[in-house]
Amino acid sequence: MTSSSQVTVPRQRAATPSTRTPVSAPPRWFQRMRNESGYIAITVALDVWAAAWAVVLAHLWIGNQQDNRNILLISWLFVPILLIVLTSRSLYKRKLNRSFIDELEPVETAVAVAALATLAIITVLVPPFQTGEQVTPHVRPSDVMIRVWLCGAVVLPAVRLMRSVAQRYLRRRYRFGAPALIVGSGPITNQLITRMAQVPDYGLRPVGVLDEVRPSDADLVDVPYYGSIDNFEVAARATGAEDLIVAPSAVPGEQLSRCAQEAHRLGMRVRVVPRMMDVVNGNARIEHLGGVPLMVLAPVDLTGWQFAMKHALGRSIAAVVLLVISPVFLGLALLVKLSSPGPIFFRQPRVGRDGKVFDCLKFRSMRPADPADAAFQLKEGAAPGGVEGDDRRTRIGKIMRKTSLDELPQLLNVLKGDMALVGPRPERPEFVELFEMHIRRYGERHRVKAGITGWAQVHGLRGQTSIADRAEFDNYYIENWSLLLDIKILVLTVLAVLRPTEE
Image (tube, rainbow, N blue to C red; front, side, top):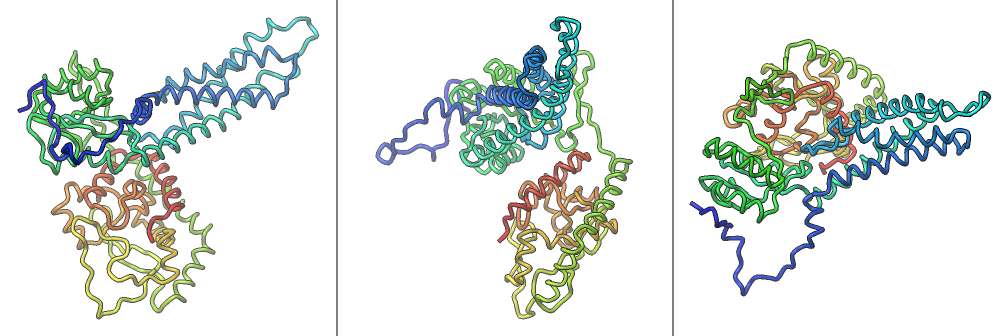
């Protein structure tokens, strides 16, 4: 057991004096930037800049008229009012993996509310500034504020989009993000570390692990172990950690509470992995019975009217899309027919909702297999998909796979009711039986209809990727389903198609 005054670091990280290469420490300012310490200040400054430009553009649109100077002057109240509204919508709180799409609706709403509030203030204050009974402003207050609203509705989201793109680039390219300490050990700790590395958009970098029992090297994934929880303050100061994540561990609750209080005293954010994490979704809330907090777990009704509306809306959209793209659909069908002998559609049994098997349709992208070819063997731990075995893709097949156009016939599956636009991707029956035996919660994916696209796919889990990761993301989608989430996935799918990865 490590003492409270000593910190242990993995031996493999140390180097002997003869082999150690001098490396200068990064400048303090760069380290602060990499830790995103000024995230909120930069966001506020950019919003002020964007709001100010919205007012300036509105003034230029109106024209600099002396008779309206009081209206134009008071319209600058739009800037502070907008900041207040944005703050009330929690847009200056750091949240994991908050994307531009998540911010668009509250930002647009905040711009509209701020413009309306400013208009109300102008309407009240402008009359006292007018002198003489015959003086009438050339421009009404509503004319000014409508222009401020329209300019703000364009400029503010545009600036936030640029900030989001820059932040995502820095996180992926230079591993920007808040350094995080993890208390705990075992599979959940490993899952946290792995997910931070796989999805840098979360904005967290694991810098150390603490627990009463040293986790295995496989669980640590090259993250330093800093001993027991008694070393927390030493580890926090040594690593410059700004976040504390408390995962399941054998540490007593009272000791964990003291650790969280110490983290707050050091200015750190504290997040706790709930014990029953499989049933905690985005609708969970905290209530209090006296001084005892109670977490209310709100379930998603998979048989309710919301899902009925989802499926009806999905089939309607599929019918409209098929009608609109019918020239492209028929053109691809003709090219597939001319590319090589065989049918236009590739039919494959897949498992859908409640374990029901259906024929999933795709445009055929390969030539018929040669019976003499050896059978393809799937890599251990990977999911089936992509190009399996010898590459028999036709020219048009390569283009369709690269652009995901081979998936278009699945709109017919949606129209028929076998699939939905959004949901877990369906798998072959023989693989489902295997995965259910070895992958945690894999079978729970079949609580809803399979989809053309899903939460796992927009996070890069396509082709021959981890089965366990797919199951985790698919079950997250089911537990947190909403029509807004479906719309977000469809938008992200379009963006993913525009940057294809399969060669």
